[in-house]
Image 1 (cartoon, rainbow over the protein chains, first blue to last red):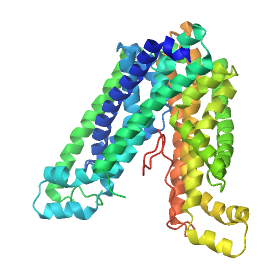
Image 2: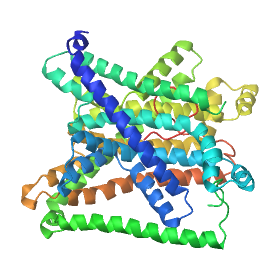
Image 3: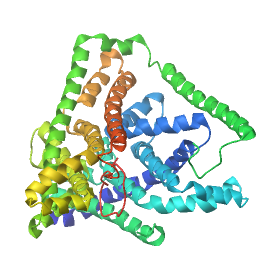
Length: 214
Length: 288
């Protein structure tokens, strides 16, 4: 029990690290995922191929391999960034593939008739997209994006093994200090539960507010 | 691309415009690829010195042994998590409230935890060898996710099937094994295989607990000074193999799913892949 009270600042730093990683990587993943989804539904063949390749490759890449390649590989090209940034890059790119698929299937759930109706009312492409298609797609896309971001938060644990400060990594100094290892892990587990449950709470609110009524 | 709400079937002018966009985009993409290749050449990644080690038998053996260890961990984890998933699904479908509660608690907890936390817990706190630690972690996580897949699979079978079976005087076990499960397995096979892809990808976590798997072998080669630290060549060799294996399994899952859709027996029964994590209604995405 006193593992937590003695090392509150260490745990706090770890939790903060996990939250920061999750937030930044989520933002990157959402932006990249949106770009890739728009590539995948574009009428331009080469962009579609690029988007599809991006998604297929990244979805089938083990995240550890990606971390390995990014954190240890990019410095070989003279790209020297702090480890945190590399970790955000790896996590964000990896998750963007899943976000892209969620967005794309959301866009595909909008019935063709909606777009046809919008166009026959004289709406331009931009208007069709922003007033008709995207609002409807957004509603159906909330739950899958929520679970993808929860998975992202859980995946951020890998960063700890590549010398980034985050929650799982706190076990090491505590272990060296001689605290009970079981309790150390109990509090780490609680930390992750806090993070994942808050994301799921946020998305439940979004779902209630805007989601498709079931 | 005609079945999208975004735009009409393009006419001649739009098609010309799209062609121009397409050419421009192709140029940009090729430019990026060329730039990446230039960087690779510029930093001397293609010198013979860095690629020579892969011609040595010892190095090849090292890589193959790593690959074998990865596949071994995957095989154990796949079999054990299928077993655990079946067990937990039985628990969740049980008629006894206590059993159901325990199974639900178990499943929800292990789905909400990062796999790596479990692997590290087993490895550090219980002080076991890397392979059992890796397999235990993967089994707990994937078993819990698979339990959800099994449960929703059994629940997705048409209610009339169960009622008819009970009406014929079958017992609960008979209804399960003779009627519900055979139909459910067919419907949920794609979801199961997709989850196995996740397990295969996650075997790479063994690298972090010094299990001597594929990445570990790569790291050993990459940190060899005699060959001029051939890190990029190692990545260029390991990633296609690893990603290729996962892709093969993913394609198998989509192939099975496509075949199912054509088959009359599984008409209109589709099992969504299990969602990761906690308590989100209606999500249907494979866990990354």
